[in-house]
Image 1 (cartoon, one colour):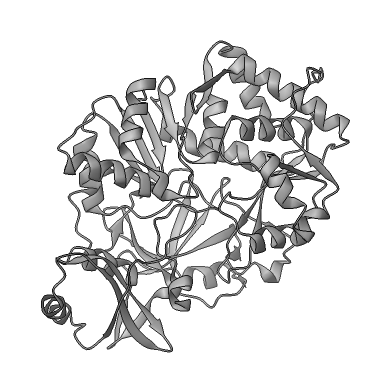
Image 2 (cartoon, helix red, strand yellow):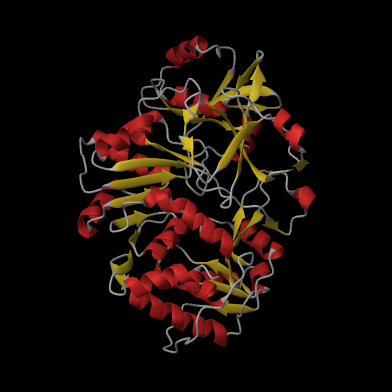
Length: 500
């Protein structure tokens, strides 16, 4: 077993089909396979072998996928750092994981010489320009052997090394496969690296965006629509920041696109107003919103055409749980590792309609992190039926079988004997006239509303609206913007907000 075999099968079946397009450059599956085999030969010459870890610091590009596929082929392990990672995060990675190689462009390699932790990595590797080809089959791997290690932020801000084995990546491939059903022959614009890898196993053509995903302000909707026309893009897979921007542009300019037939967005919440914009702008598309997490992708999904008509009375609907995902709602628990027998496990499960923490289980749900002992797995629960993953999200299951999301468990609090979920209030706040966005958090047990005003902000009107919500006595703070998560630029970064 080696996850790279999915790509090799696609290359065998579609040798002349374009695999990747980036900044006007195109590479076919046959050409990409040759580049990968040349890169494997180079890794072998550098003495990077089976099981050796390679820290990859390459932005989304054709070079990134040449490197990742070569590492898999070689039986080595790709340690993935997001391009938005700062100096401290990179140093933490180096201290946590013993890497033999560092893969980056010349800028990243130059930076590595000025970082004491990166300097400890023995070998620096590049995208090779040599012509030597590795003439052997992919290194055989056991299903429980690491293929890809990514760093999650963790609830404390300390990274957790999410260990994706070859077997896990196959299961994730199978779990996500139905979400792209019917779009195999479409040219797809994709901002999510793991989905681009999925596409390379399906023989799809993927357009890598020309803007920097680490700098959302470089995203210009007009340029995307030009790319749609230029490459005849029929499918888009992107995080909500980008799909929401495309939808908003369409509504504001009374512009509708009939080329795109398939749109998937995930990585952050999508509310009914955004779903309505997406449906208006892409009327001929199958518009799908996916709910999941780093450790469990997907958990559920919902059609934007349905979402646009929902209210948030029960929470944000994120669809019926996927068939591959076992899901239940449990009572809020302390942030530690737990083990439960049959009766104990049943006693903490919530009934239909009751809110609690969303927990999931399945073959595509990550079970372990490198370097963490069992008692450090504070987001896992061991039961007689197996290991469950705690998402950290609050939610409830409705009588219709739909999962309703309420936001992060740790950000909820009790106010006047009622549970307050900031996530739900955020939707209410941004729909108040004169408010761009807002949220409510507790600091030293005092609830405070943070908001970003628009040009037509009226303080008296805003105070009146808060009073109608029963929040008239709560302190408010005005900000120029609310900090967002660096990966998808969608979710409010509550820790950074508290620091502010």
